[in-house]
Image 1 (cartoon, one colour):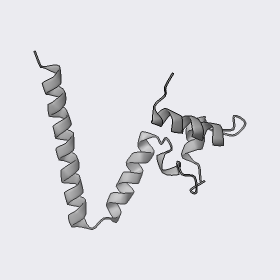
Image 2 (cartoon, one colour):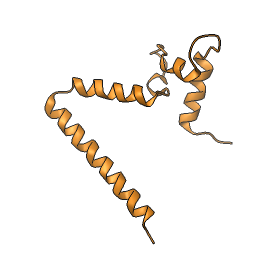
Image 3 (cartoon, one colour):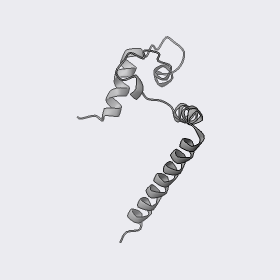
Image 4 (tube, one colour):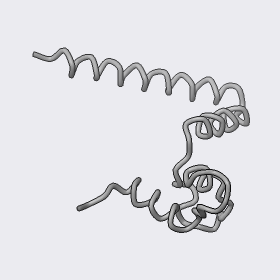
Length: 92
C-alpha cells in the first residue's frame, strides 16, 4: 500500500522523536522538535494554530507594501478556490 509523502514525513518524524514516556502526544513532540539540521524539519507536521502563528510572524516582518500584496494574492486564491468548488458542486 502506497502512502502519501505527507504521511511518510509524519511517520519518519514520529519514529525519530516520539517518546511515550515524555509529556505530550507525538504531534506535540514533533512540533517541538529542534533538530533544524534534519532535511525534513521544514516539512514536519504542525498544528493549524502553529502554522497560523508562523504565518502571522512572517507577515509582520514584511514591509507594509509587500504584506498588502501578499494578503491581496492570498484573498484572490481563496476566492478562486471557492468559485471552483461552487462550479464543481453545481455542475450538471
